Length: 324
Image (tube, rainbow, N blue to C red):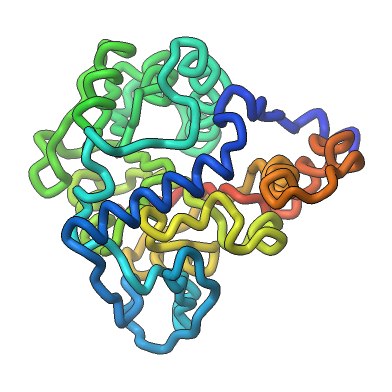
C-alpha cells in the first residue's frame, strides 16, 4: 500500500516556496501588520459568524492577542477582531509575504509543481479544457494561468494587487483584470478558480455570490483553502502557518465548505487534501528551539503521503458545480 501511495505522491521542495526560518519571518510580519492596523484604522469586533451569522461560538485559540472563534453552527473558525480597513494590511507599499514568489526560478517551480497539478485536476473533473473559459481570482504572479493557457484558449486572471497584476501580465502575456467581481467586465465563465483566497475574505457570501454571477450554469468553482482539520493544525495549533490573525480571518474545514455549498445550492464534485504537514511540524520544532526529529526528516515524504491519503492534510481542495 505504501508503495502505491508513493507512486502518486508529489513531493514539495520547501526551499523553493518558503523563506529561510519562515515561521520566524511570518511571526514578525504578523506583528508588523498588527502594529500597522493599530496605528491605522484599528480593529473591528466580529460578533457573529461571517458565514452563517450564528452567534453560538467558543474560543478556539488565541494568537497575538486575537481570539480565533469556533462557530458551533457551521464549524467555521473566524477572527474575533479584524482590520477595519484592509488597506492597512494589503497596501502594496507595505505588504510582505513570507513565501518565495518573485524570482524566475521560483515562478517556474510553482508553475511546474502547482500550476500543472491544478490544471490536471480540472481536466479530470471538468473534461477537456480547450474551449472552456477560465478565470483565476487572486491569480498572484500568474503561475496557474500560465499553466492553464497550455490547455485552454481562454484564460484570464484577476488580481487586487497592482504590483502582482503587473508581474502576472509580464510573465504570462494574458489579460489580468483589476475589477472587483461586482464590476467584472466578463461573464459566462466555465470555470472560476480561487486558490488560497477565500480565507482572506471577511464576508464570504458576497464574494461567492460574485463568483456565481460570472459563472455560467453548469460551470465549476475550484477552491483551495487551509484545512482547519489538518494533522499539522492539530499538532501545531497557534504555531501553524495557516493561523494568521490579520489575513486568514475565516478558516474552513470540509464541514464548513459543505455548509457553504448548500447555501449556494452547488454540488460538491471533488474534494481532496494535500499538504506540507510534516515540513510544518519540523519547522515548528526549529522555531521553538526544540530537538530535531530525525525520524520525521528521514520519512517526511512517506508520512506526508499517508496524511494526504487520510484526507487530513493542510491544504483542502474542493470543486463545486453550479446547477443548470
